[in-house]
Length: 286
Image (cartoon, rainbow, N blue to C red):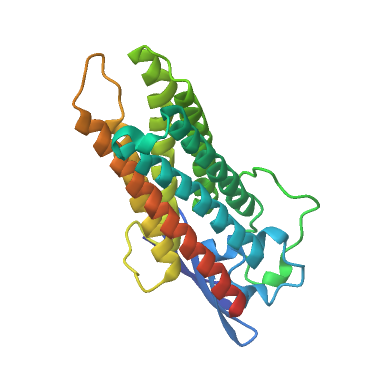
């Protein structure tokens, strides 16, 4: 845990966060006590400090933008849940395999869309400033940005790249190659890459919201969101490991367990997305 207290322009500022990041600032300005949290700031959910700014709020930090990000994530998660459920039913409930695989690919598209929308917020998030009114608007928005010292930027970037890997993984399943090693190269490898990046992204989001390497704050909605998403990424990771195609035959239960973990992961993402929609509504009501 990185914890620092200092003075800036005569104000006592306390900062905290998991080393080497500072994700939390607490200070007083003009007789008001202000709490600055990295995650809420980049999403535009910190209404207290936003009220002090003199520049208009960017559209990617509005309540409706955050709500739609959650909705799109929920749509992608639902399609992954649907594809997983059909895969677990013997005979796929009469649905052809290529259709089920197409459902997975269709679900990966909203994932990529929402992941980029979320990264756009991090790419254009301003750094901490004692006086929010000092923030200067950009002439044009940054499409990717470069903020390697921000856990939020690192989290959204790795997540976005991970969704691209899932695009490849799910598309290749529609017309899967017949040879086992080609299936591992075209399908399993992108799945592993995407799952690893998702897991890295989820943990970065977790430490950003919890301001430490580990935290337990179940009463906070933002913590609930990042924690349930972390669980979902762990389930996706185990599903990917079990999905490896061996040279010879394997027990049918292995793929069933992999698919079940995929369903659990998608369910966690769905719950996290719905909670994030709720979060955006609460922020607008404050």
